Length: 356
Image (cartoon, rainbow, N blue to C red; front, top):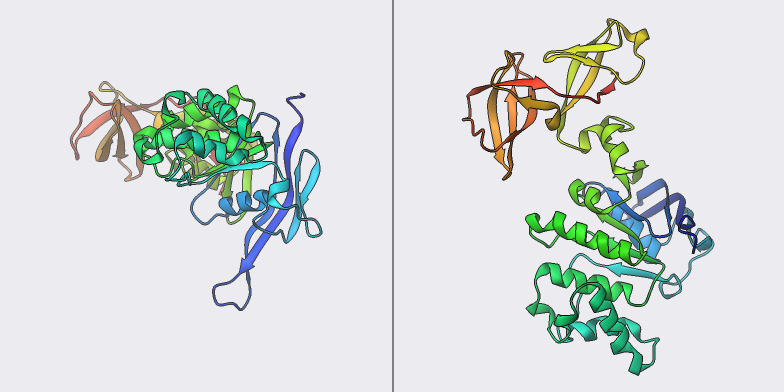
């Protein structure tokens, strides 16, 4: 199989629904474009209400489209004139609450989606998928006897067992403890990759998105603003919204200097792009928490105004002499008090800037 073949293609998708007062319609998704290749994992990342779950429902066939097209393996699944039924799309779904049947054991839950197979094959196929998610010893257990992470793997095995072309995951980690999410996202990625499964998930958590996805689309107001690999989203955001949404950072004012540099309150930085036409002009410079380093010997001082303990480090909110607040990750053995001043210096080696 050609791994570069496009499996899912969405072109200029628009979806609307009746407004609450019944007097009109509200646009949930507009002008959305994305592609996923066979074996690729994609993610729609955005805050609640941005339209990401609506996209999943449309891919499944639960939502009609107002404009645009959804193609699965180059076959038209949804348009203004075509609407394949859900059972004709070869799409699997993992829901937020996993939707396991409480009265069926783990093996029976997985076998439930295999009604197309002869009865004597269902159990053996279900057991094979249990092995693939490392739960073969839990075949007789019931959902309430499993941890959240185990339930998630059962739900994933059940979705994968009928061997769909595409797996859709709707906020798959939202019901789990925060400390488990990133680890389980990594486990899910390994399972999907090991089985060459193409998947698209939606989440509001960028750490989940980065831990599992090959491509991420940042969504707001029904649009994908940038569909890219996580590295590019972080280091080359297409606009201010993405720069602000991805990572923990703030914009500070800077003046462009000769030699393609910019001067900010913390010092001078090398610019990545040619700003020779902007010398003397003011631009906004994005400073993220990992651009600032704690340094007891630095003459540059900042006041600790807030701090969040994260285990290996603190996330400090620091106030500069001008009153501007910035973020910094500081190793947790440097436990400074609120109101204390600490030394810092710039370590940014990739500068994201925007003009007003």
